[in-house]
Image (cartoon, rainbow, N blue to C red; front, side, top):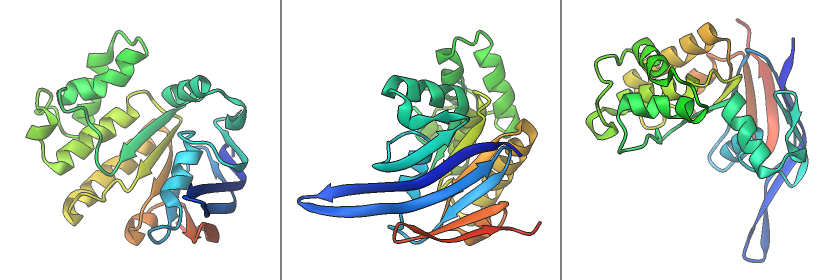
Length: 228
């Protein structure tokens, strides 16, 4: 299988005043194309920091990341942004929808930025897939949390990403709504052949993926392939 993400000896630290805080140390793993992969661990273990580094939103202090066959450490900020726009999708815990745009407009924006002349049509199709064809003209404030996350799901898949990063995608949802969103996420992921990497503290969600990487105090303590 093709490796879509290779992480080698990754390290990341921050300074708090004069004190150096090591967030991640000696992190190495790889993810295969079209796989489902989960990063788990307690609060403060470095999960979200690792996700940001893998997605090329930030740069490590040491080590290397190869994302979609591209060594990200050799890229300028503009080149990394271009890589994300072309290859990467994101889903966040707090939805991050634009409040002044309708559901349809929120999903169409990434497509319009790419110059896609069929942006509205594709956005409409994606919103239909997530069961929101009757909410196209609604603004985020007029949608429930679950509906907002479904709009975010449609937006994440709008540019047909090679790899999708989801940071606590059910963190702001009740259990029943979260379950429906996760089912949609996995269904869309399978249908569109995307690689899925999820950060979560939800063990039930983690066990739905093919691989679980467990962090503790910035180090890998477990790297498990799940029996399916």
